[in-house]
Image (tube, rainbow, N blue to C red; front, top):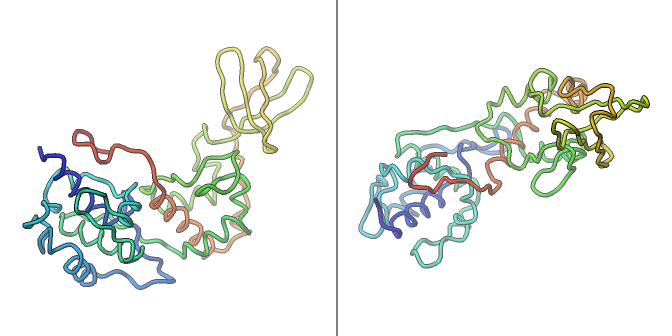
Length: 275
């Protein structure tokens, strides 16, 4: 087992090379692809002096290519260390490289490790952000990076391993693509009142939902004549007509990009467990 400095140093270099568990390639529409040649040049100028040209360790820093405890690290939660380094380890910050070059570096590092799982964004993430908070109105229900609604899930922590086609399917056909627990709850009381919202809690005797206006409603099940959980989605059903194919791709790209960039507590740096 590597001593503490070795683990931290290797972690730092991995941090200096990525932002997510799945590498997110540049937008097709707004940036040139990051080629292996560019990654090799960046690695040579920023990393090789300490870690060796092949990443297998040098005079001043350990192996980051074949060491198993480095290979199994994800890139998530690493963006801050990429920018700022880690005090006391000799690992500098690489924030001046910018996002695109950091992604190129991590792509090349994964190549040195013999593995590379690159997700190519199908559209333009910047345009997708504008759609999310604008025309598509996603932010009325969903939060993203601290902004937006609260009735639906926080998409800042989208699973970056989500298949692009599946994510597109969720947007276009939520009834089929979403699991029941992420769909609406519809209740009818003994007095004939109807409520629809998101499930917040339930047990054998009671149920609590939050309606689209943000209000919480608590019911004893003895007060209800019907409880329908997960039969329909709260998501809009008309994105096929409201958004073009290109706009859907932009929105998908934004969701993948923020999932790759958002800090998230995990055990990726553990010596004992994989993610």
